Image 1 (cartoon, rainbow, N blue to C red):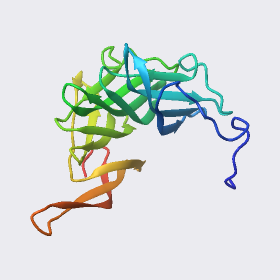
Image 2: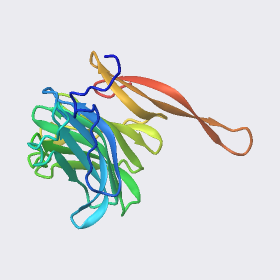
Image 3: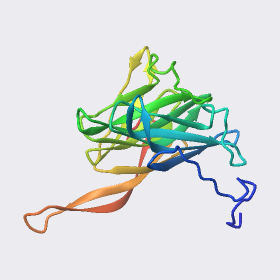
Image 4: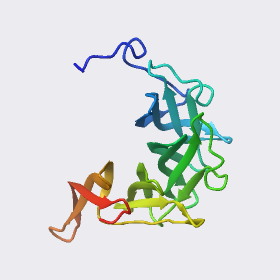
Length: 231
């Protein structure tokens, strides 16, 4: 609590892990109920014969060692048949681990939202989305999934589309797939849940036209909506 390194964690308080790739970046962290640590991001690796940025996740024991019960070596990396995948958020419900982010699609030259489900042992969950193990979705714009939230009946991936705040919602009721989008001139950066409400922080683009040119200034913003996404 005094801010010094905790030497019970990897003897130094610091652990470095590599996927043996040319570029790696950690973007998110999740502490499980058993205090094991999930760290997500992306790594430039080869998946299905193609080398690109792929979403990646590590799981550590409480002492900082890799948890080898997860994907055999504590590391899981996968990707879509696209140019670049970025994992930005992790959530857990029951024994299923949800990963949220965005994937660049070559054919459309834009990003798509993605939600991936993996098992607690670190394999793609073949029971999710009729065996696919993931959802890819596009609003028709450039989509960047940033924060993943599990609701008892739905999964939300919040972020921005075409520089507007947006979300992708999936859930099964009467075997129907629900996909909803909310747009305001706001870009989500982080999210917290409290008393059935969702709070989003980010920035708002304010147009300014001193002459024939249009400039935009960014201002810090916060929004609140109910669990159903209504502001």
